[in-house]
Image (tube, rainbow, N blue to C red; front, side, top):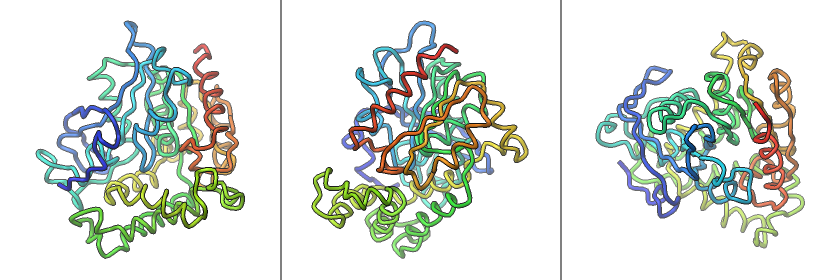
Length: 353
């Protein structure tokens, strides 16, 4: 077990670690004691019909949702809804390679099993049912990998999802997106300090994490972001200073194996595995009122990849978010971003289902 202070309430605020017990995984592995890091906001009403589930993205935790998306002045209003944000397995907060101990000591570090998007959703469904008594969700919402989990929820448990919002993500990873994730993985695994996954500290892999940060600079933001020098609005005086002062510290604090666990799942997101490879048949299972919300300048999940999926979902609408930040507009640094999200989520939540 590695003690990484980044993965603590000091950095991420309040959350609970809730055990769902043994979790048998799609690809044959097992997590003996799967613990999920959960942050909740608001109160569950007596009817238990005001619950919203937020699923997290690659490298992200409940922190970004709490600080940026949730509040009485947002559509995700804790005065109206009981909001449950579940950090995915391998997030660094929930059960992850570096924190596997006790019953999980046999799967620590390089021995950590492969975890799919579906495994996360099964774990979340068990958590909501067993710990909160929630059988149906007013909304499932997530961005990027969180959108992949949102689609999995809507396809796998259609009777339990009344509304779904997939922000900047697809139901099926495209070949190009798979390769982008591969580049992210190679940035870490090519660092000799990674030591096959059995390093002593995340700092041993700092060179690989810095390379990953630079990769995200290329594909996470749009070309217009760099051309228009948007980083100046974030109080940096050069693109080099932005890399060194924003992206590099963001990634070098993280655990390399946690990122690898997440990227493996990201690469293999595919709801069509439920229907023998037939994506149309899988998306036809969705009964939730669904908003598909790509970002117009996103290089990872472009509109052209999201639109064909949306067209296969009945009771769905395509809502394109305009932001030259590209995929990492998800951070909400552009003042024009959140009002669009709130508008669409507010409309979706007000829709009778």
